[in-house]
Image: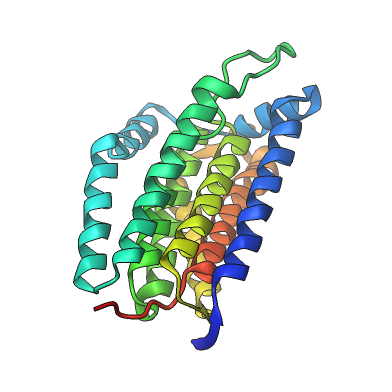
Length: 266
């Protein structure tokens, strides 16, 4: 771990702007073009789950709720207060509240899915992924750098499992998951600016996040997720699900990268 006596704000602003631009590009292609919808729908259907597996997935997703948001918000605030970081507590609440409200408003009130013969119900961004990713980002803001790599790995595991499960269950397309990650990344940048502090480089974060992504992929295989076309479909399933898991690891690695080393407040 290498601490740098430079403000985290320029780094966070760059990430925030990049996340917004990436989100706009994603929506314009995956949601508003026929080709994008076709590719996204095809990617959603590369894997399947039997009845028992679907019940397991639904049971796991059932834990992602408004109550979970409230509990995690309270935990982040308490942890930040114990560590005497009031600004970090505010930043964590901004991340959780801002990301979840943004996702719901965009999905239900603003974004529309054009009719290209593939259905007009818009499911972008994923609310479930937003909840788990935002909780991870908030925790990364309030915990110390010594535990940040571990938290990033566990957060990647939980977020990737959630995202992959929603795809396999047929609730969300891959673009929905990536869109949610970009929203949380943008709000994490805002939270980092509010929290303030110096930036820190932690090379071990990449190892823990991608380990978490691999663990998530192994997990969905162990509970019974299989390629739609059997052995012939392994490559397609591996590409799609692997890309979603890798995108999750990368997003959370960047969240950890922009979270500052906090200074104690009186």
